[in-house]
Length: 582
Image (cartoon, rainbow, N blue to C red; front, side, top):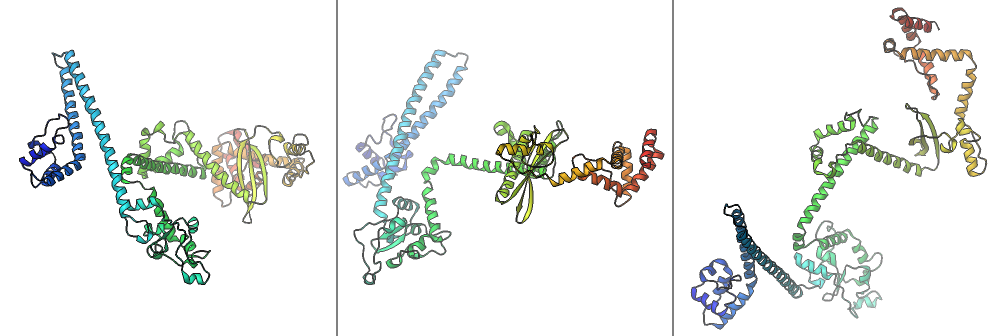
């Protein structure tokens, strides 16, 4: 601990340095020995009060400690601010007193604001000056140390710390440009490349030349050679150096082989990563932003996982031909499937629970979102089909339309092509057809009037569009069907036969009781088939209707017999008897 006499001697010699920066009063000895150990160290360097050398040493140490002492100034200002804020509390309590005086309150508040403003301004100035001084001193120290201690010659390679590596990376590869380089006389006699050439720098930027060793090195391998991928690295490029000048160039030369090697590529990647890495000060300054970016990246990955889950659910329902939305206020299969997954996936469940924290409270469960998911899946499937079609050499296009249950004309476009010598057929569009004029349909040919018509059919539209006659080939299947249909229509037996088939279908299907009785009788035989309706558009349905009656004839007759004898309704018994007799 410094003595009283030593402190008084220092105070006489340096009065301004031992003053309180706020009050400008001299700091007493009792306070001095309690606030900062640095001054104790200063005084301990003094061995005699009369020794000029000792006083000079004290002066140097005191100047070196000005930065620490200035930090004390900042601390004292902060203590003053703390005192002012405590006065704010007393002023607030004063305003609630019964004998409250507005004039005194405002005067004291105004005085407090002035003090607060002055101290804050002074504190800001001190902090700015201190930071500037710290940055300047750091730059001087680093520049001095680097220039004196670090050699850029690659032959002086050693293990470097991060600051030294950053300095060398900033300097870049050591490219020495000399008027002439040392020559290998033996190679010169043989007429081969006998010295280093500075033109190699252009093709190989990481190449370095050592004047001390007359050899070349690899900049990235020398500094960042250790690490993944360096198992097959060659030490000559990092430590020893290469001077085989006659073997350096050419497609099989040492430089081409090395700079294309895995070891060099890995060291180059480590060099680039190090160049992009922030310093400690940079990391401190942008630490908050890095945390925000990290959380944002996590949120994006979570949202991606959720969207993929929703798409998987939509794909599952589409693949199984299940409806997405329910009737009225019911949830529907989509929402119900999501709820099922939430029970077994805590991450998914928490994401939906946190919907109130997201903008617009999105959950993607609304029917509009479901329709959008279906659209996205449809586009993806359609694009996959089109990719296969574009690779095919030959394709055929088939377009047909029919009315759906809501009596809307719906047309489909089907592409037929060959993939891997196997015929493939893909439907690429299902849309409503608003007009049945040939111009608005497609370029498919069948015997329908809107396709084969000479005025407004497709063949007429093609002829008109191309301004030439296009050979029209009617569809053979349609033609055969029309021949059979019109040929059979002139036969009374044909008309009566199919009329009976339709009556049978209507009789059983119009009553659940009769339908159930027929199913019961059919179940007793192995080959029983229900009666079929006669479709007007599907050609094969009439064959199926005949086949069903042919196979299940005995069961149908037995069912009609049972109904004609046991049914409680007279008209039903009569109809069953008539159908049985037919």
